[in-house]
Length: 295
Image (cartoon, rainbow, N blue to C red; front, side, top):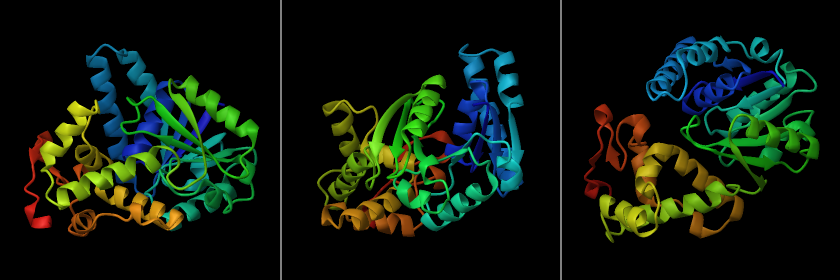
């Protein structure tokens, strides 16, 4: 496998493209917006500069990594030579369904189709295609160049050969694969999102404030980041969308999103991406946001 296409040039997409390109793969990065693609390349270059400054890679490594990435605004052109396509678009089921239909139409017959989805059913995505045996989940963690985990999700019809190929590929790019089957939230978010939701309920009900909740989890449970800070990094809108998938998929009220989370997302407070969530993220600083008005 030499040619990999990545659809979506946002935080996850440009991180995935970065990792594959740094490991010698030719990467086609696809987005409908050329400005978004230019921003993605700038982000990748900036992240590579940090690695050069820390002496993790050389200037030559940076140059070759960037040379391995081409950008495309047309999906047919971007996937025409792909042996693997990784979809990393917004966590929206209808959008992903359309992308998978397009991937199936334009990618070569033997190409594997993967999704970076954090919660949407791989089996449902596969049903949009004529190659359900070649559809699989590759759930990378943010930031992709740093985090080692790739959660590999098998759909109902995913072949053992495709699973083995993706497991091997994940190891070749320096990641640690963990296998999951196709149930709502898979492993990572089935465990993580109820914890984040409970932390938000704890804030909402006045049990503790933002910093206290995060401090308890960091110092008492040895988490590197508190759940509310982590929610800001993930994106509160993404957390809400995943909780809806869990709630709809299991029908269990324990997965119902806290009203505070719903109100914050409706108010446009989505975490790091919007500059404010449970914390303020202006100019790279982190300050406690007064949350009483949301209670």
